[in-house]
Image 1: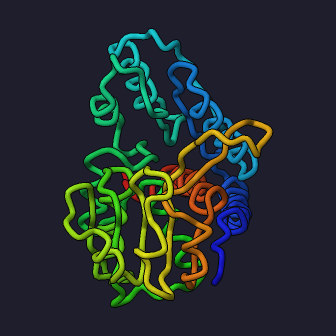
Image 2: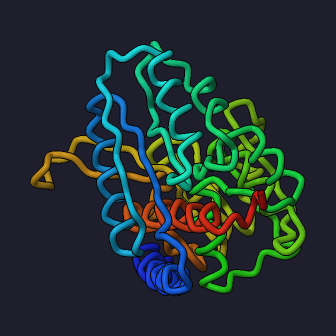
Amino acid sequence: MTIIDGKEVAAKLRKEIAAEVEAWVASGHRAPHLVAILVGNDGASQTYVGHKEKCCAEVGFRSTVLRLDEAISEAYLLGEIAKLNNDPDVDGFIVQLPLPKHISEQKVIEAINPRKDVDGFHPVNTGRMISGLPSYLPATPDGILELLKHYDIETSGKNCVVIGRSNIVGRPIANLLSQKGWDCTVTMCHSRTKNLKEVVREADIIIAALGQAEFVTADMVKDGAVIVDVGITRVKSDKTKSGWKLLGDVKFDEVAPKCSYITPVPGGVGPMTIISLMKNTLKAARKEVYKD
């Protein structure tokens, strides 16, 4: 059994991106500029944006965080998005989710210029991805693909089961793995799937992305399966200084011995998501997806 080390892979890719940025700037271009809009004081969101700022500095990007009060109106936020859409010095930007309940996330996502949508959530980028055209891939699915590639995990002809059908992870990773070059036979499972345990047990590759702690147990996994655990749930613990610990969607201790490869939580998929954001921002600066 091999543990898939997302931290190690992310560190390698950060160095590669930094070298590309250095060459890009040396050839006379300005450094790529990524902006993050943070609405409110959600602790997890603040931590995540902080990690993005740090990663931008490491790879040589210019980074800006626009911090807005939780009470701002939807119209005000849409106005700030319009400014960034029209700012030629901004290559890409993200609006950190979740947003306050009085603001429509879908309306915000659709307001972002697809050319600057480095989160890859805009319907135009989703459509391009599904069609196999150049696009900004959403961060977590792209991170999963990078891990599979780094560990040289065979996907062609393999039976892949994706548990979860969110627009952020489940749907896009199912689509991507079915495309030419990855060539998986993909089954997507969700809360209405009948005989879920039996379906998952047939999988060569399991991608667990439903957000339910330790949902996947040993009796759902066949020997030699590859497990990619996307879930991350914070639960109370009297064994840590913080009083909390992080659990994935997979019951790691009992499932890991059956696997050929498995991602831990934390330290598996998580470190890869910011790398995808960096890749997309560099693509935006180079105009690799949208040429004009």
